[in-house]
Amino acid sequence: MASVDEPPERHCWVCFATEREDRVAEWVSPCRCKGCTKWIHQACLQRWLDEKQKGNGGGSVSCPQCGTEYRIVFPKMGLVVYFLQQVDRALSRVSPFAAAGVVVGTVYWSAVTYGAVTVMQVVGHKKGLDVMERADPLFLLMGLPTIPVLLVLGKMVRWEDYLVRLWQRHSSKLQMLVPGIGRPLPRVPGDAGYGGDHISVSRTLCGALVFPSIASLVGRLLFHRVSSSLQRTVLGGIAFVLIKGVLKVYFKQQQYLIQANRHILNYPERENPSEDAADDDDSGND
Amino acid sequence: MASVDEPPERHCWVCFATEREDRVAEWVSPCRCKGCTKWIHQACLQRWLDEKQKGNGGGSVSCPQCGTEYRIVFPKMGLVVYFLQQVDRALSRVSPFAAAGVVVGTVYWSAVTYGAVTVMQVVGHKKGLDVMERADPLFLLMGLPTIPVLLVLGKMVRWEDYLVRLWQRHSSKLQMLVPGIGRPLPRVPGDAGYGGDHISVSRTLCGALVFPSIASLVGRLLFHRVSSSLQRTVLGGIAFVLIKGVLKVYFKQQQYLIQANRHILNYPERENPSEDAADDDDSGND
Image (cartoon, rainbow over all chains, first blue to last red; front, side, top):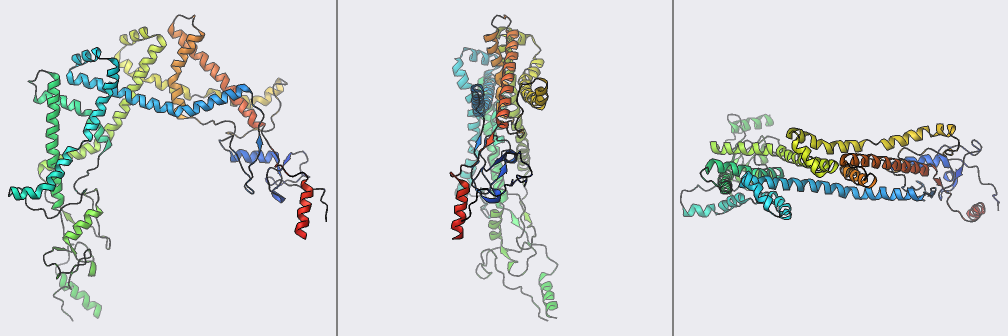
């Protein structure tokens, strides 16, 4: 039985220096490792930890060999520093929610403004201001932002698509009832085969927000004899929706018919394909 | 020499039906393919195209075997349909830009409102309204939104970090000039080793936007003898920035010192590690 009083000479697994080469450096054995990876210079391990912890001064680091977590002790922090750290952490935790609040507030405030502008556009500038001044402020803050929301929701109701589908489903019956309304289709196109039918977010949003202006414009063009601004704009809006709806149904139906009547052509072959084939056969047999 | 007048019997490469099985169906040879993939029913190819073109009625499709692009002809569209298609395409092309405009407008309008609220907060509600009513509207529409922009830009100047770095760089010189100001550090921590030094977007934004309110509050608390609202808020703002700066520099310097003085402990071994090692050796030899 060999009594080992002196451990074998240490060497650092980072800088490979031995005890004899640097007699001042502090040594540490931070993990379960034995043998040649047991010892490391305190300074070398610190440098290696800095590398590992990049950007995260408090993270835990383990030995890459044996997986033991290094036990790192810090000097005690004063009460002021502890307090400042808690404040810093609380601010970091709260700030994303606060930023989200800023975004929501921005959207909300713009919706309120849009609602107010729309009220003035629809009932007239002066009367609109008058109505809003007399209204309950809380009612305004709740009611005005719902105007753009309702416009967008209304724009999302795609009643023209529904009409087109209804038409297509019952077109065969229509043909039987009213002869000559259309000839039988050569085929039924695939569902998405006639025109991009996807709902575009940007188009829905812009269409909804520009609608009161268009309604006001159409009202002034078509119903200039109506004196009430509100009535004129409402009539203009209804007229615009109907005209647009009819055009859209017509357009979609035409796109459907165009897709239904598409035809795939033969590949253009040489003058006499059957003779060519015979010639090819010949050369193959020779 | 065999004269081949009749081509070999066709069969459709989709439904595998031959000419004899369906004598009415229209046949098409749409690509350069010969042999068993030359012929296909017009109806089968149309179905297959619908599958391929899902959601894109106008896209080109090629033969999966020979790569020839199929030649698809559509019935001529009327002038109205052509016009409607052009309008539809133009709207689809414009709408993303219009939606971006809506977003920019929303942010801009909120910035104008924030600027106006800030002016009223800093110079007082009544005087602020007075100033803004007398100012040129164009100047207001340009000037008010720059207030939050300048606040955010100002918040992005991290002068405290610069001071901390300066301190750390010259601390050795300070130690020589003023003995006892600090003991020499055991090590210099890695650059990001002392506290998360990353710039948080949400924190910068919220800090910048809440600054006028804090300046106004600090001004009212510390300088309540100053009668001018503008002077009080400016003094409050300066005081807040200075107090916060000093605390931040102190906190960062303390974090730096804590990281510099960290120490890694030895792994706790059993009572007499050298004897244990000897025992282990024995059992290994037995």
